[in-house]
Length: 292
Length: 230
Length: 111
Image (cartoon, rainbow over all chains, first blue to last red; front, side):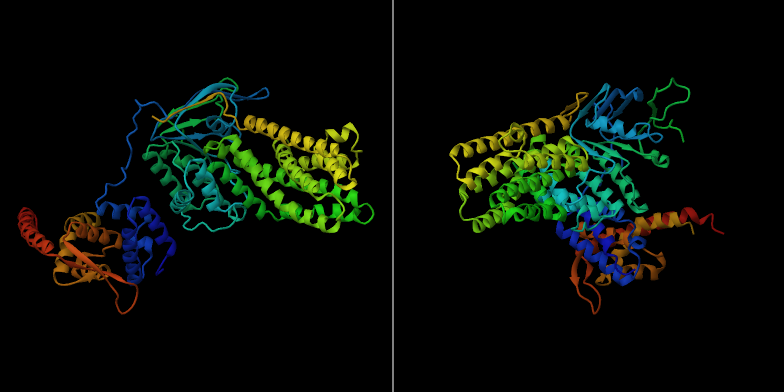
């Protein structure tokens, strides 16, 4: 592969995201492109992932790198605190006494069998569905990514960026810029100007994630946000989650993929316990004690 | 203001991209007029008002339905309920007015004997009433199919009921018929006044109901407290 | 050879090797990588080499210009600055002292 435009596009986005001025970005891209032309190598082989290479460039140019892991200050008031959440559907108790505390810089995972109330719990945290018991305190703004349906069939990605950006108080250009930068980070270098209904399932899901993070809300609530992602996009997504946490966001992800739990600081398993009284749920595993 | 205008703009873009809705808006009222034109030219104008009202409220209902899913996200992104319904209603009013213009021109050219000023007033009222009525219907009825049926029933009763009866007066699109009588049959101004009053009252009533329903649907649930970020 | 140790050694001296290549005349990234490989230092990936060049340039030890070759895209040509030449001479002296000491320590174990 002599010249992989996608790889270079993503690199450009990564460099910009690290605050490199435009002339520097142009120079780095030019030099990288020349090297790839001369060497005829695969960019990922010669330079590694765009984000890793951008980080190396960023560091070499003398600006401090993004810290590997933000220290979570548990003494600070948590960004999200849900206590004693209960939810009934008729006589059926869906959620009973569920607690969740997420601080700035933490990632929490909500796991559990199908139909155990994961999405409902997230909707309650977002305040879009009523709880029958308990309370939720959120410090800061909320970004909520529903499981599909948070986009309009007839608007293009750019129009979505402008729409959600305006809600967050951003102007047209800043919304578009922020949306496109986030898109590059999810391995979606150039959102085409087509209506969302015509996007592939995975790409539309990326749009959902981007709209959630647009405008930098303090608390991100994501309901199985990676459905339809290919392997690379999936990895990029979790990198992004880590980075958002490092920037001081509090993140809650509903997930059924247990192998990714090592990335979470807190795990809440909503699967009903066979030993508990019927309907009693909400076991809370601190890091390290979650079931494998 | 930016939030409101952004919602209006995106609503406009959505409508322009939905071919079915655009078709409904632009061509649907035409047969209402043409079918009766030769034998009952006056009735044709009244039916045209009903057709326009149906097309615009139908489009408004589709707009409301496509908004249902994205509304919670928009609410959490910083929009208030009134940004959403007012923005959508402004867009529908604007597009509805643009749609009525060629029909107004058609009637003016086709029927020189009617009061054209009153005709224009009736059409403006059609748009003013139909937009909030359709949005309200879309907000209250969760399925498009059921909403369409309800709209069909409303329009059917409006067309069949004798305009002088109480039943007809309780229907949302009565003002067009009343002002139509004034314009076509050159009756006294009482018809015009009653029609305008009915139209304005309906527009106001539906807008108020829409405001209440939107605020209720998008209210922040009481268990959630948000504090400023520390 | 232990690849990890090799890359650790290289990390400490790659900037000096680049400086010494540039002391002989202007060059660009890909050719420097080839020259380093020809000198027996192994394959240097672009992801390793270019950050070193950027750092040297940031510190004023080398300067750059864009030049168009006979084929391909524009290349960024580097040359050593007087500051870089001074740094190279000083570092070369320090390196020979350091290498000699390490050599002395390891002399005894060699067969």
